[in-house]
Length: 92
Image (cartoon, rainbow, N blue to C red; front, side):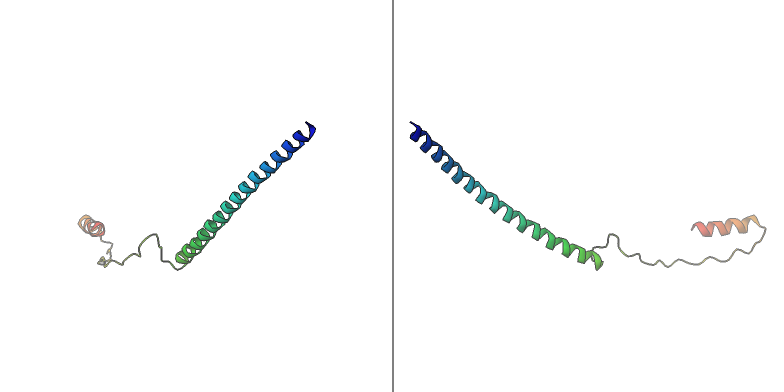
C-alpha cells in the first residue's frame, strides 16, 4: 500500500511537471510574440518622430499672404465726415 501511494505521488508529480512544462513553453512563445510587437511599435514610433521633425505632418497649413490695399494716412482734420470716411475705410 505504501509503495502504491509512493507511485501515485510520483506519477502525479510527473504529470504536473509535464503540464507545467507545456504551459512554460506557451508563455515563452507569448513573450516572444509580444516582444516582436513591441519592436514593430518602436520602429513605427521612430518613423513618426522623424516625420514630425521634418515637418511632414504639420498641423496647420502655411498662411498665404493677402494683398491688402493700404489706407491713406489720417490727416488729423477736425471734420466728422473725414473721420467717418477714415473709419469706414479701416473697416473695409
